[in-house]
Length: 115
Length: 113
Image 1 (spheres, rainbow over the protein chains, first blue to last red):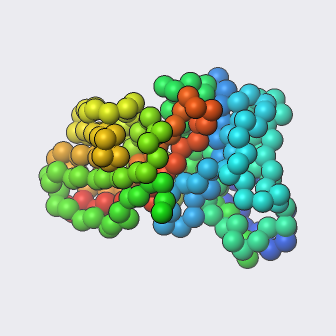
Image 2: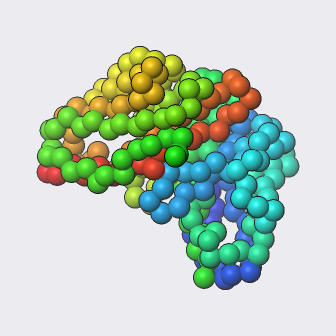
């Protein structure tokens, strides 16, 4: 079946602009996660949702970052007043539930470049 | 000190070699251990998943977890050029109210034909 999809695949923006990154999880997966991967590093956790609610947003670096999942499926990561340091690949993952045996399946990522 | 340490490589091996990839960690609460493979400009792809200590084998891949030493390994037998990628270890506490994965930096592997 279809995997996790993310749009756009690439996003170039200017410093100070607002961006939205979209994630479509695997159908039926109730848990959704956002990670950020900088060059040469492993993914770093940002936030995860169980259903519509953000269960843990402890990884969001500051209040310029916000994510929503209004209907418990698609999620949008929103970044205000982008900075050059926000340039990275933003990865979305989903799992069936938050149960221990359920692993996370990742999408291809959105490569964000802030000029 | 990072919670999960992984040698970034690069690691170059000839085709057919046995590859050993490793991670160490400091958080004794980690219960779930994963290995992901990531090709250039792609998302991580799950390879192996292990709960607690022990070994798990899947085709050419074997994952080992030694919780007493806080050390995990991934072995690749009969390595192929198509195995050339970055290998990420990931760990999770799960069941303690947190479900995020903590990743290593990834090891770049190149298998030479």
